Length: 96
Image: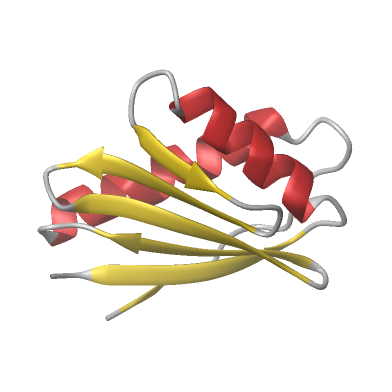
């Protein structure tokens, strides 16, 4: 199963994780703590978000490369829209 990870720089990681989880909880299974969130998009697709000292570490798992690339775009797009306190740095995805 393909996966990718990226870390974006922001001073409000926990806040944005909370916003993203709340946003997607209306449609998908979501679990969340103060420092981590997981969104299960179904069909073997999920995203784990972890607050780190100066940002958010994101890990995406998907059944194929096309779906993985699509989820990367969707997660970053939603993060950018949720980030009204600052603009997170660009995400550079590392795939494996």
